[in-house]
Length: 540
Image 1 (cartoon, rainbow, N blue to C red):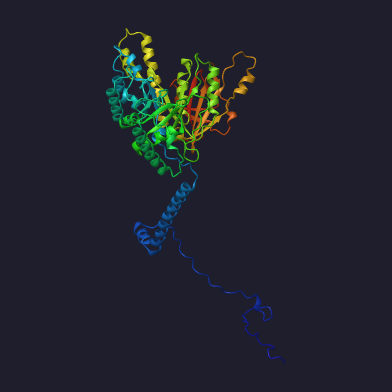
Image 2: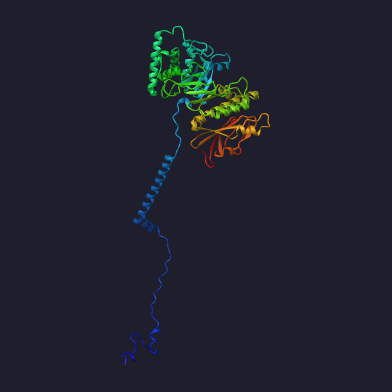
């Protein structure tokens, strides 16, 4: 008999009324105790006291310190990256310029001022009165013409012409110019500086020996600074040049001299001697210069006795328009300008002047051209510029005087407009690096070949628009010239790389202001415009 037979199963519970069968224990329910629900607590923000206690804990203090440190590290890193980008980015480096490379030359004859005054006297005194006004216009150096009598002996070069003034007046002019911060360059072009070889009293052996010793000293100083070897035959050297006159005017604080390329002194031997004398009177702030006025189509190069090609001339002054007995037509003026714009000037510092005769309608246009070309502008005496100071006073009084004629009022306003244009151009050139020494690029907005082909049926086609760009870094100045008598619009598609927007700097009529776009710009007859270009969305 089994041990569990008839007994209750192990681990089973038998209750009353329940069967003792084998499945009874499987169907018995389990008794699971239930926990009481927790009471609901709604969320509440921290009070001020609790927030102060939590924020002052060590964990939050460390987190705030890390955040502040991360902010300053990121800021310094961005600053370092910006500085590195600026330093490493390519940019043009400007070579230091001498004073004559930054200045504006003004050519005049003081006797012209004399003719404008009643009585016809005191030309030098009149000029002395105008010196502060000329300096305020941006003029840096005066080129005095007609100072010396072309028939005078070279040994008496310090004797001035009767019309110009006495020697004491010239000395007074040089002193007043120095006070007004104006340099004076003396024009000795076409003056016989060498004279005859047998001048009486100058062929004495003692004087020739003294001159020879001076040449040796001057050349020695020049060679010592240039570090080149020299081969010179002093026995064949010409000592007839009046060095005492050259020294005399340099001692009077003359800044330099102007000669012509047709003068006999335009030779390596003579100019080498001049350079030696100039070194004695030159300093870093005021170096004495030699200007050569080019009268031929091609300037003959100078080969000095120093080995290699050494330029003994500081400035070469060239005329834009060819000399002519008649007024040049608009087509001739445009062709002459285009020829100069397409010619690259190398190895010499240029200076530009107008030169030939042309219509008065192109006067302001040529002034804009001369003042914006690379090099040092050389503006000839203009009555409208010099007398604009008095004209402005007359215009002011004419507003109060109703009986004064309108012609006088208009003439005074025109003189003031020319002077304002001159002053704007000179100060813009002195302020903007792109206009002072920037790169030059000729722009083919409208070429003369296209103009001639499209207007082949016309008897006298209008000259095309001439344009060039002066650039330095990211700054660009666009100069536009409409020499013709008809209005013309630009074709920006011919220069697609240019920015399409810009702001007016000035124009020949002094009546354009504000911003503009090349797509909508139209040039009026005989108009010149200077525009400072900038990319859309920026203002350089």
